[in-house]
Image 1: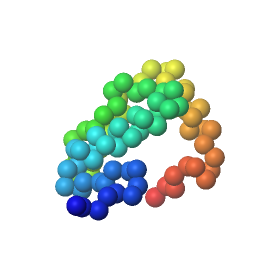
Image 2: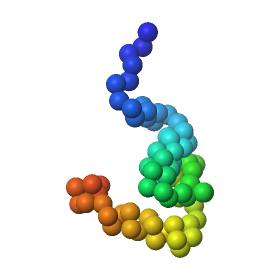
Image 3: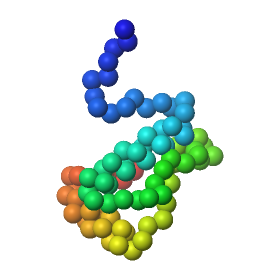
Image 4: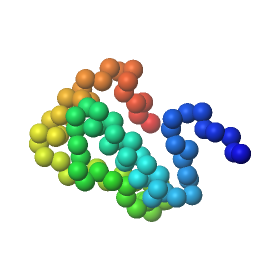
Length: 84
């Protein structure tokens, strides 16, 4: 029997960028829904020319964008990801 994954996060599959993009989109969708935000067009997209997975955030109305802005602004600095 293969060893079980001890974390809740799925194991990335670098051989399938489209699947990775869909997984990332699903994780984002779940997180946003917990905050009461829905992006109806959110989904995985074909990889970029360099093979990197892409997530299509889709279009959003002004109310949804305002909610996203409030959510992002409410994050404490330690919760915000570091920029490369």
